Image 1 (spheres, helix red, strand yellow):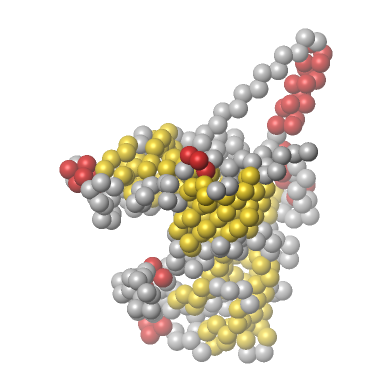
Image 2 (cartoon, rainbow, N blue to C red):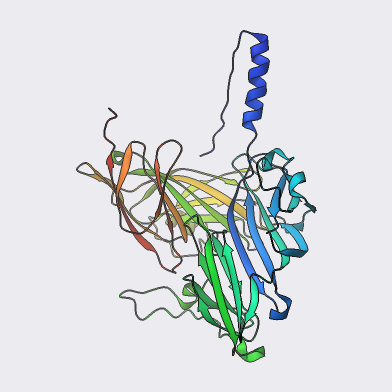
Length: 429
């Protein structure tokens, strides 16, 4: 997956060479980009009209040394701090005006009417890597958070695709216009959480009233390992069903090769947070064969070693994959430096799968039939094919190279059984 693009420009005229070089450098300056955004809003006392924000974001512009986070119009920010997620250490930052922010090439053309939190990154963003940030702040905004009779209202358009809102202690949820999970915090406060993969803002309106228990009696019973009796087969546990989908950070992208090969490249990102953990195990599902695995640390760009083992070899080496593994099953093992307390490691694993049952050609139709379990999944059609069917609702975009990409965002705690069909594009006339 990792690409190194080299340009060789040979120009006989020295003057033209200088001009061309200057143009290339100007054109090469990238804009600020980010990914994996998630915001948690904790509503404070209604009288304060304030809410604490926990904003998780990944800076992805290769070589960037700074990240700019806008302060929303109409909001008064206070209590800002920024943490480097990989190390858990605080980062230097300052609040700058929009006029000052746009002097940075990354911010050319951005809004000059707002202020920005300018964060000094712990390390320049590695090529095809990331810089993961946690930005903490409190906003006071009476237009977004206010009383309405005996209710409190949080009324805010949210452009971030993954969000949660936590009600103040003692308040029960009485209205929410965006389909959301409803979850209880450990202290009993009620939260809503949702994913929005549409690319448009979600015009969220949450309403709450006093009536919820407070103190020790408000704390929920810890979710159990009991499984759903409703399912026609053994379902997910209560703990799995009540985990917050929007905050889960595992995602996967499939790049379908020509269907005659039954092969697809994929990469998936995984964050390890357990102190002392030093290996990742990817158990290949039955019916698929894996080849050409590779991995690297997204925060630093460091390449990691990979090894394909069988379940029997794992057992002989006394390695625990964290789940039962059949003796004949393939497992991709990725060792890395042990995770230190308060830190974590985010890894991108790339592999090629061959799966004739999942990916095949039937007559002149491409068929991709696979169960996708992550909250965020994407499938890219091979070059030269157009989409004719998708059994599961998806957002569809055309990539710069003409390929079609489908994104499946699933806010439910179950897998989606995706069936995709495609046909070859007609020859150009």
